[in-house]
Length: 495
Image (cartoon, rainbow, N blue to C red):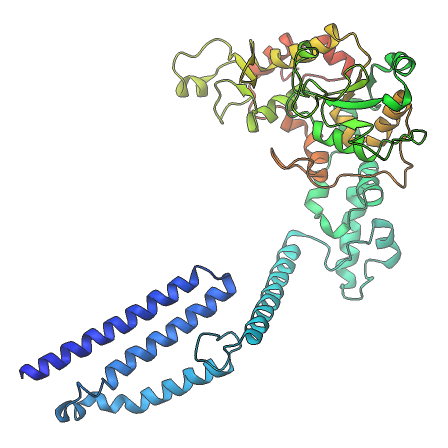
């Protein structure tokens, strides 16, 4: 009896540690694999655990077998064990993903083939899932990305021969309905910027603002201030020395402006137009694009020490103050002030602020941190917008151009033409004009072209989370000269 107990104990320990070792080994391999490899490794791990467990249950090692144990009822499971071993053996032999040591598929060539096959199967599944999602969201089905709206009309929406005629006609009918009142935006997206019709959904097109809505928000013309200083700039700076550089406060589209200055501004008469470090443009002015105008002769941005400050034509970007405040709530950068998600922009405290903060003031003051040595303080967010641009307007007595973010979004060609004329350069032709359809920066909101067109024309988004008291304070304290110069209007909910 004592010997039988010892045998049973040895058998139990061998089964336990065999399964445990195999499990640890398999889990360690899982860490280094991708999703497809992990699934295959889990299958191999499960099969090995099952085999070891059944072998220990049915056929213990010869040292622990006794005549009495061979006659126990569990011997009836031996045929089942053989069947299971044969089944897993066949899977292991024919499975191209089974590449652990000792298996017929273990070789470098088989491993490469396994990975390729896994990736192919994964791509097929991904494409099937994307197709299903596109169908649910109202995308046109299997329309080539190179097909514009005009080509879509010519082909009757069935260019590939794989689209159901009823579906294509329905999609085209909705397309024509959405295009009414949005013709300039449709032309810019699908003809000028050459975006494929299969890259947008019908709901996203429906969210685009109409021409009438944009006219009410920003007027119907491109506004560029400072054109009267262009002649002075051309007279005092030689053609070979001229360059433009970007300035503007936070969240006003300075990166988008830098893209257009680089790609859509040319100097055909300059010998250095294609040489040197950004011969005709800089992504920021020498003193820093976000820095106030008062530090023009004091601050030098890192990497811009060699720039001649007297040769630059600053391009000052301004944006609708309501959208600047909204963007600061999402991405404050150097702005520091007390605010809570339920009420931002928060010019005048309300019950949300009083419930969240202690000792709430009458107005939330703002501190702007430019760097370790320079900070400015302002009575509110709108005071920051006023005072940053007022310094450029009043104290900057050098040639400079002022442009609106909204014009850069909705009519970039007309804006770049005026900048090129001012500096003595040239803008590309309509066919060669380059558009940025993706986001202009790697940080921040990551807004692409379609989102910018939609968000900038959304009147409700301008006043999101703002109270009537906030808008009243904004109307009373916003710089009315700046608003009038650039055609910005503050809504009056009481009217």
